[in-house]
Image (tube, rainbow, N blue to C red):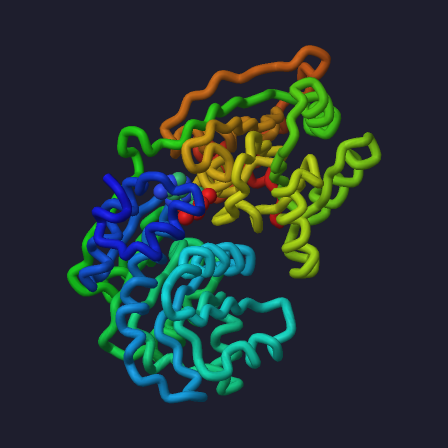
Length: 419
Ligand code: AMP
């Protein structure tokens, strides 16, 4: 199967080839012809499946074909809207679309807009309209309020990582944006998971969609080795240092539960000669963008991040992810470890488990259908014991004993601090 045989024009095939895409991934094989035909698409795709190119290539082709349409100058109109949950993803998706569009005979005007940076350059960039706007929902609505763009001509809507848009509390913004769009348009919705809210949105939004499910297909599973290491909570940083040095890891993404932990763990590693940097929502957007590009260029050995970095980020050749703190939700476990083993590369995901977090990890394993052996590293064998579980819900009822689930929940709640 080649990109050409999927019906893509030569300019897009050569741009894909230049990015190193030799053959289409399964989601690209399924989505590209459907999108070219104008169908709505409901894509259930795991991270690293190649979904960005799966929607971008046919969207670009359709927009290029429609470019003969008269363009009222200064109209501020937008032809395609790609909504993403985070600033980093907006930058990443926008850059990927720009690269794929570069050989089209007519230049595509592609605007990338997100909050946390000055709105003025974005307003200037939208003068005369845009073919494609890649946006986070809040900033998009700000720009509409400033009269910097109009959504009434949008012919293609893409919702990327729809589940994450909801998780991050964008449901209301999304509703406001949908109300500004014309009724007749093509809708493409991609999500890693389908909780009821996303299912309801999909039912409302999509007309007779082509459903594409690439999870679990043979050959598409990322090649990720998952390891679990038992360690005492207060020895995790030392163990991390030991593993980084012993294993000569060159690029490690470490997940922690709080911004404070990101700062302190990164500082401790740095003081011990490991180039580590924190990455969380309190760090200025410009600095965050710099950190990611420096990490890609190997100028940092370790990025210590909150769940801000768990989804969407594509750091090619990221060999190791470490769960220093476990994620609160089992879905985030999948997203975190999905940062490694992308696009056919193999990856290693290590989770540190303490006596207090062991019950929570058991929940993660249960929900994910996993059963992973526990390892101990010489010199770091744990001595802590699990804290007494505090019963919840039925604690005041005489005679009522906490259920096993209550105990697991209580232990997990005590062990996992909010971000
Ligand atoms: P995505 O799921 O869109 O975030 O893409 C994950 C990674 O796969 C990115 O690094 C893409 O550049 C890469 N990729 C996308 N399509 C292909 C392809 N057909 N062949 C090889 N790599 C690809």
